[in-house]
Amino acid sequence: MDFAFLLSALLRLLPGVPLTLQLAFISVTLGMILALVLALLRLSGIRPLEWVARAYIFVFRSTPLLVQIFLIYYGLGQFPAIRYSVLWPILRQPYWCAIIALALNTAAYGSEIIRGGLRSVPEGQIEAARACGMSRFLVFRRIILPLAIRQALPAYGNEIILMVKATALASVVTMMEVTGLAAKLISETYRAVEVFVIAGGIYLIINYGITRVIHMVESWLTPHLRSVPAPAVVEREDTV
Image (tube, rainbow, N blue to C red; front, side):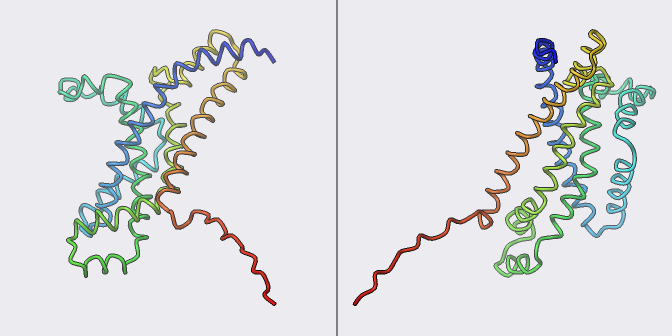
């Protein structure tokens, strides 16, 4: 094992970590907002809106993310209406194309997670809130949404971790994040095993940190599930 080369490879790959985190954070944030909208459309009871959301989710969950990145980065530029539109300065950049593809993809999966969380809220709590005179919006903001977040957080945490790993696909559109730098280093040194071991270790550390943060947030949202220390046992002296 060439530890000198492993250290050199680590130093070459670390500059790609900020870009990896940017792609993951921005795409998850935008995707979470879109996922909430899609989940509300699915639960709206309005058939046209519900079918639009269903079609969106079906398309993005049934096609590979790599194909979606290619279609957005290479495909949209084939239309003159897009090339001469105000969106072209954004769509011609691989950075924003990767973020758009990642956000649209995670929104399709996240919407089903959020929809499951919204439907898991007990009806009795909603009726109790309405009996207290709360408006529909206030019930949603103070009762339904917090409880839904609490229920959906573990599953959505898995989706966040998957999106961190999915940022590796951004390297196919010339993005020099961790995987992109790893591919460049391999083309220079022809030492694929060592380089990919270091790249995998970097993703492992990033996802471990995310896992711990999600665990802390989950513990903060569910204080009733925290381990409560056993009460101290006081020995009683027998009286004669």
